[in-house]
Amino acid sequence: MMRHSIWRASTSAVLLSSMRMSTQRSLNTAAAPLSFGTTVVVEDKKGRKHLVELEEGGVYQCHAGVVEHEEIAKRGVGSTVRTNKNASLFITRPTLEKYTLLMPREATPIYPKDAVAVVGMLDVTPGDRVLEAGSGSGAMSLWLARAVGTSGSVVSFEPRYNTYKLAIRNFERWNHILERYGKLSENAIKSGAKREYEVEVEEGSTPDFSHIVESTPTLKRKEQAEHCDGEDENEEVRSADIVREDEDGEAKWEKVLVTETKPLEWRNAFLTPQSVKEGEFDAALIDMMEPWMSLDALAKGLKPSGKAVMITPNIMQIMNLRKVLNMHRPSYPLIVTKVVEITHRKWMVDPPHIARPAVVQHQQGHTGFLVEVQKKAKFRQFSDDRDDDVHS
Image (cartoon, rainbow, N blue to C red; front, side):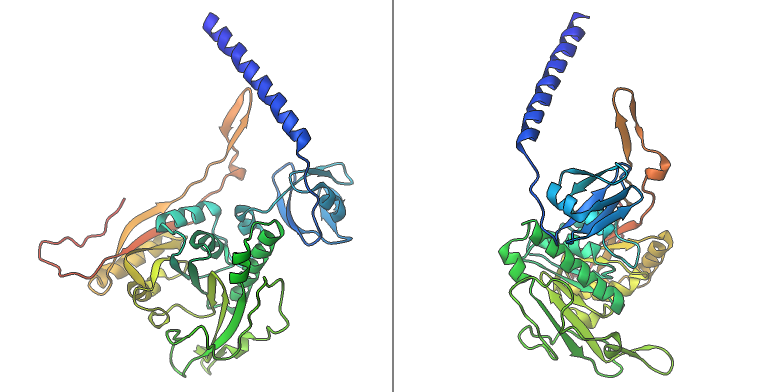
């Protein structure tokens, strides 16, 4: 009994001491004011978040009331502001996790829990060259670009023109946010110079990028030493200039639009074997409705032992993928090594008595399956060699 009393007394003393120290630190750390044009995350007491770009004379409106952008700019990030209804709003700097959930999108996003798992499964490191098929709104492209760094590159294919342009805008806005908060190095800003050009495609063929030389784009080129912010007046390429439909309504490629915002290279095209070079990529991410359509490109483009992760919302897509691999086993040096589903469970912790999982409405349910595929090196196969897929 005496030991418990001594332990409680010492714990109380430690907590009181830490509270005093934190109070002293908080008195000495005031938030720096923000300039107009800076993007912040505004969060209410129920955890609802919004991306807000501060404008001179601007006003933020929500169910909790109204607050002027000037007031948010004066307080800075890490501070709390009050609306005209006396509701409190917490102001923070956008993180990549928050940005990918709040940025504009046209399809279901790849959630941070899956994105982090993908980067880990692919073992992406600075300097790697990564293939992405299915840019979507660009969420996974941002996670991959952060992993490869300025010394690596990500080549992302997206056949839908509107989605392709949205992904580029989201990437540029994120770089603009990093630059505003001093999180983007000068080298990264310069390497983020954007150039855009078109590649001619012969009638009846699929886009072929193997002949592209960086110094000689085929149509137009735009370079600048500083980061591009917003729409550029020279961007006049329209969807009709790139893909036209024949009499049967089928897509017929005439030109393919390529936009480079290093370390990301965006291609407004379908992924085909002609789009990649032999052993060009260290890793790949496939986010397609029919992931088995990427097998030819993966078999050609991945380095030996290179990994690809396929994101699929439906288990039947994985069944079909396995059927295709089993039917064409000699043709594809690819094996399925892992099929996982990432779960994320929120908890409510409120001392002294509450410590339990959060209510169902606040939990994140099924978002997709992750299928890990690995490329085998070419070798002479003997009769006693096993060629079965590995499951873990």
